[in-house]
Image 1 (cartoon, rainbow over the protein chains, first blue to last red):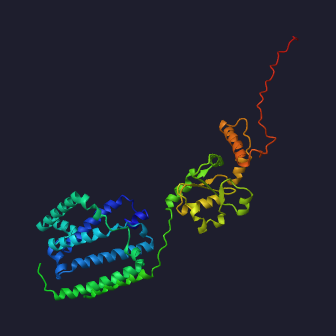
Image 2 (cartoon, rainbow over the protein chains, first blue to last red):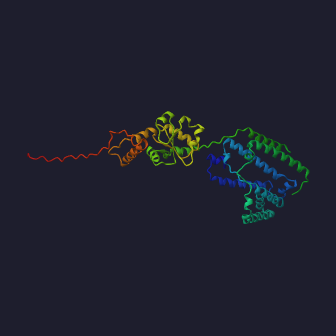
Image 3 (tube, each protein chain N blue to C red):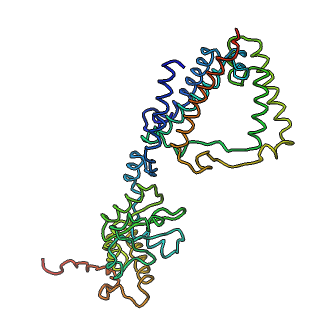
Length: 196
Length: 205
């Protein structure tokens, strides 16, 4: 838990407890903002509700700005944060599959669980389909392994790849996100509202 | 967009702008103070001159000796196989690779313990590992290895073994012709003086 364990304010065992609390909070706020509704989630693709895209970009900005400032103040060691390896082919194919699934089902994996939590049948169906997909993937993995690990760029970040400073990248990303928020507002005003 | 969203958007832009001007924090591999205290208090960080000499004689490949005395003193005499990094130059980036070598046991020594301890502290703070100090430094090296003093007759066996080793080590380091310079210090043969039993006085009453 970042600065708290780094400075021995709490012992590392508390990380699991804090992770549980954060997970519960995450689920709570997802449901509280209406993300257990498939219609609300699918609205980003039809132009009548952009809550999802705004939420994701806001969360990303708060996280990246917070992390960089915490790294600057020495509260966390920014350089030892784990960076997932980048597999270009897998990311592209997985993104397309995810996009189709999102549009058709109206859920992503996390929000489907919040829908299950409140007893929505479409959430149940989506989650069952999710686990079937996982099972299918694991059974066919030997055949797709080569493509799964294709385009391995390693544990790389955008700032390292394009050789730009993190501050400049975050500023550009912030401006892009704010512009996106404005554009989504304009689109929403022009699209016929939907009662859901 | 409502005023609240405009304010929040402006806040995000200002904070991200701040990141552009914030200087990049230089990462230092600093050891945690608690760990540092444990390492300072660990007596195993000191090696005796006998242990160092033994490793040199056995040609331990992981041994790396650093003499932190001034260059002039190093030139006059130093422990065989050591390099010289004067304590005042210890922070020079040129020497940093010597202070942290994977798989090597790095032993600092000076004339006593003070300068070697300083070097050890500095190297440990930089994140180095397997760092040691030769206890007593060159003064102890000279006294125990180059010119060992024979132990007292009543000394424990261990002292005699150390002395025997030191004589051999001295010959190794100084050459067989080099004397221990204790020409007057030959093995004292223990002479058991047997007192003659006093005969009982004879005669008389």
